[in-house]
Length: 342
Ligand code: HEC
Ligand code: HEC
Image (cartoon, rainbow, N blue to C red; front, side, top):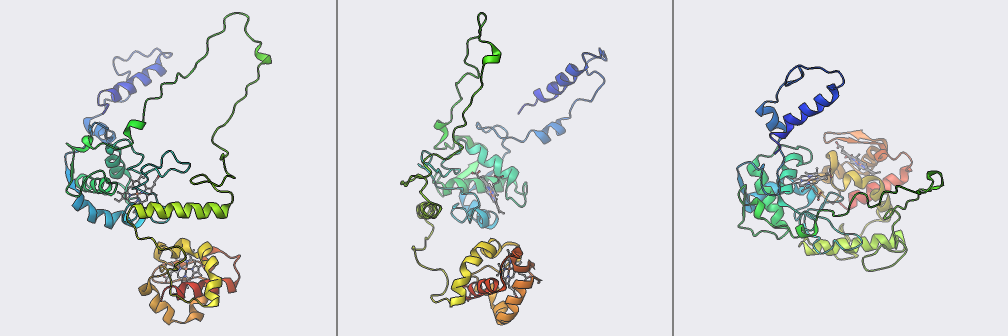
């Protein structure tokens, strides 16, 4: 957007550093050259809230749905609810004043232009700048739809993007506070040697950490965990994601004693890869991924888990990289994983 300002700024910076040398080489001081329109275009990629900077294009919610499911849902969830710890993109409206707000595109972002701009430049995470403008319009439209900001017939274009009003926009304002608010002392001023500088840092130590409350942090880590789980389930329900009832287990009804004993080890040491199927790891609960492995027999699987092995799918590090685990703990974790996946 600063088409004229950029080359001028460069010239100004260079001239300032050369004043002392008193070089007089005419207009450009003998350094550099004027940036070409093409070079400026390479930098000039931002999109403004008023839509300036958007490329011509369009994309519908309907087209966005398929693209989103293919390129984004693995991390951000089918409904924008966020898989695991990946960012949540939808919901959270009305939570901003709570102790632990859910900041999403719909609850927090002030302008739809940021959505286009960010997705176009940075997403999908593993392949940024791989989307065409039309794909970006379609996916942005779909993320707006997931936030109930447009209906399913909506087609987002460079013409109408600036008209999409984000609910939280009015809560952003220009900070009116002056940087410095003191009157300068000219006579009878305090002796600097006698002055003491003090400061306070607000917001670092969580206040109310030991308070049990509806949306305040809870009294213990255990209670905090429960509280956050509850809040997350409410969030998921609000987005229409099916939530398992508390107490229901995802695996088959009866786990063996070894499997039950292995559950905690699995969660601490193995779920990072096997929970979502990262880097080729067979996903727990995915029968297809485990059938042939289970058919090898427990002994082979446990041996592979303890000593590590490289198969066709990827690298299983010995004990999942946790050499501190006993062989028995790993064997129990394998039992838990296998029994939960058949
Ligand atoms: C491999 C996982 C992954 C995939 C796939 C992925 N993202 Fe992301 N996304 C992330 C991560 C990680 C961040 C946070 C990046 C950061 O903060 O630097 C993020 C951030 C975002 C944000 C900003 C969220 C916020 O509130 O700050 C948006 C919007 C977004 N992604 C949209 C998309 C879209 C649209 C796609 C598909 C085209 C996509 N992402 C694909 C991992 C992913
Ligand atoms: C860093 C990621 C990672 C971690 C952590 C990890 N695994 Fe794995 N695991 C893999 C990968 C990848 C494979 C698939 C290797 C292949 O078949 O190519 C695998 C395969 C397996 C298998 C199947 C072996 C077979 O014979 O087919 C078992 C069992 C297993 N892991 C158990 C565990 C246990 C138990 C833990 C925790 C103590 C664990 N894994 C932690 C990545 C991981």
